[in-house]
Image (cartoon, rainbow, N blue to C red; front, top):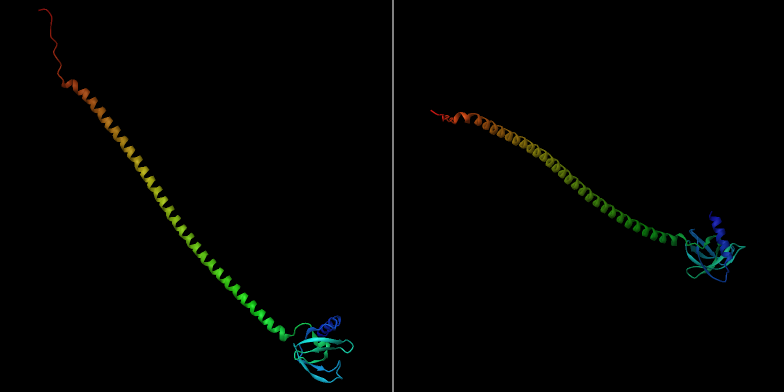
Length: 204
C-alpha cells in the first residue's frame, strides 16, 4: 500500500512542471538522506526528518530521485518515494488533536444542553403530574360533595312527602271530626229544644 502511494506521488510530481516550485513533505519515515545528486553514488550532504516541509524544484524519473529545498534552505536530492504532497504526521497530528479537542468541547456542550433540556423536561413533567394529581383530588372532593348533596336532597324530598301525607291525614281527621260533630249536634239538638204545645182554638 505504501509503495502504491509512493508511486502515485511520483506520478503526480512528474505531471507538474518542474519550473514551478511546489510545497511537499517528507513522508513519515524517521528520516531520509539528502544527496548532492540523483542517486546513492552521490555524496550525502545531510538528512531530512519525517514530516519536514520541503519545496520540490526538480525530479529525475529514471533515477527515482527528486531535488528539494528543505526548511533550512539546503538543496539536495532525496528518493522520490519519500516525498509526499500530504502533510506528515508531525503536521497532521497537532491539527487532528486540535480538531478532536474542538469536537470534544462541542460534544460536551451538546451533552450539557441535552442534560439541561432533559432536567427542564423532567421538572416540567413533575409539575404537570402534581397539577394533575391536585385536579384529580379536587375532582374527587367535588364528586363526594355532589353525592352528599344528592343524598341530602333525596332525604329532604322523603321528609317532604312524609309531611304531606301527615298533613292530609290531619285534614281528613279534622274533617271527619267536624262532620261527625255536626251530625251528632244535629241529632241531639231537637231533643234539647222543647217543643211548643199546640193551642186548641176550637169553639167551646
